Image (cartoon, rainbow, N blue to C red; front, side, top):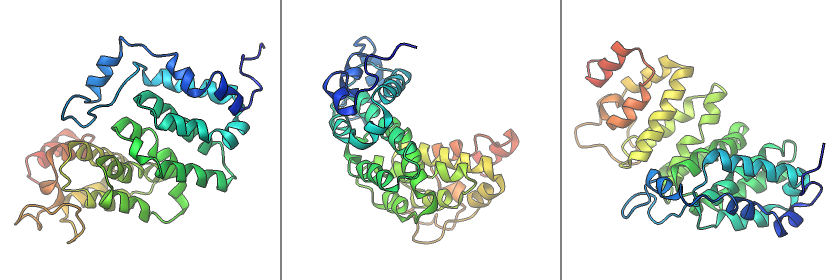
Length: 279
């Protein structure tokens, strides 16, 4: 089997020739860029305002990351690739930042048994959240990193992000990272962090919380229904509900989008009862 032109080189050598950055730039498709900019709401006043795109779809980005990972020799990349990731995560181009995050996930997932390297990945991630500034960058990176890392650790970090995150993206990281816990049959953190964000004003938080509640409900619908039908404990919510609503069950307090996402998989008659507040 012929070797890749990059096979056998260290990551630093690759960075000098076919780096992750240059490999991504080579895939630019300007004809696709306007559509991606519209999709990710980058117009004036929108949540992604000012972001720039190369016109690279996610499957292409994944393929580039995978090829760079294989070609650069994973051991070398794990140990010396952070300067290249530093360059990429700070890029003005959305897709290059995504490539950096997907590469970080690769490093982390292949570093089983190397806790120091895994810690370095987490530290890198948390110190660069200013560049994780759209929902896809959050959703494709946070739970394979923070969620996995915190499976056997204290999870206060996620509560702090949900409650006090500097941006809507940090707060979204707080809830979406619980996906890993759900996949391991653990739903309590999802419900608790959902309480923190129950009255958050941003639509992207409504969608994220509803999505994670739906996933928790797939594991334990009884627990989800119990959560929906009860009022939240006092002083839990990040944003206070309207006066007079604190004693209502959560499903009657939460934003409509959040509720719709959360109950999407319920049997239709039951779903309609929730939507019509007849529970």
